[in-house]
Length: 635
Image (tube, rainbow, N blue to C red; front, side):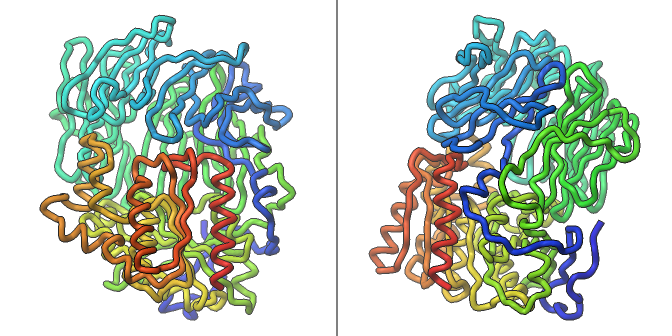
């Protein structure tokens, strides 16, 4: 799957060995502006195939859209037309199993408190199905008669998400299925509605599954082990087995099942590996099990007929990323997006009864710009040793020709968000725009990243701003020795937890970077823990990762950039979202005020009407163009 070697490993023995994830070099280093780049479309969420298989719906920004809207994709013409404009950002769109009723979720200015609406595509109107301002409504699944919708919501108590069954046939009345002091953040519903498997999030390393039996009116804790993750996925049609993802007694996530009539028999592993994480899901419409694997920034799909019964053996293009899989209603066809790190890809339709190479039929054109595929950068694996000898895997985005040319180029070091996240060999719009402006992008998957096993993922628990910052600094040292890197022009840019990493790095290592950009970042762990929602899942996660606000007060102050702001010497640009509930504006206002009191230059911009997940086109343009303009001034 990998093409060895574009650079001799011997020449970078101390810095890491680079291996290609792309076809041979045909690239130029073309520069394109934001207005042209926005014509490379980025669909959001799940694609919704409509009955007949000739059209689909999906959420995205096109043309002069100020925010994401619902579009219709004509498969034959491979073109998009506007279907519904909600007057604000559509967070998600979904349908009932027959795809005859369309639903959307909206929040107010990015505050993450969602309402659920049904959209009438004929009249271009919507009606409220569930939700109210200031509270969450998270759709889970439909009842077997498609007249009801299961929803997780905190609308009775903001501290706890509970399960409700909403009548969507017209009355919008609902049944309360769980209530109390346990908050559930995900659920799987059995075919006939007898069972619901509910996920209780304890912390980043531990989740439980509760089983709701609607027939017996009972709720019991089904799977509960220390330092073990359980994620409910689906039930067998006969409602006798629950399928879930777990890392019980393993370092990697795998797919497993539990017999509900005899739980003491123990879990039955369906798909595992020592080198990859697996996650499984099931589509009853096509009787297809979907298994996704993740390892070293690579994501792949495997398809089975039935529940792990028969591998379909459908092969996808080498080094491609598959995503957004769905089955076309009442057919034996499926739709999937297939892309590469240097190719935004397209949606393809293919028969589920195929064997061998998939007969992929393109049904979209996601690149409607003048930018050629050869103008996009490639991605490369890059491994290096950190301060304590731990091996860190990262990904470099650059043009193939850069690796061979004598020109030394500036670098953007990108610490990802999360921290329970990772960067992969996918088409990354930020990275492609920045490489088009002449910057190499380096994204290390530092300790605490997912996709490298449970032990690796928990290495930064109660160590925020510690070892993982050193991983970034040692990564910076490693790439500095690459022949095409200008070691005097290495910058650091990040968002969310990545923004915290940026601020931590420049307070601890004031001379390490030429410039820094922090987006929707957190600077003060004390105020951060005070401002996040009081939901036990939020509190449990961050207490396990950051520490206890009372017992670990000294650690909070030691690791908060706010309390070390006077150390900063790096030119700094900060972008803050006005309505962010995760990293709130008041906290960043205080940090910026402290910088100014210490006469430390900082450029500060608040993005109006935005939440933590930036959605408006105007905001993206400010961030993408503004980052490059700022960094170029520091070169």
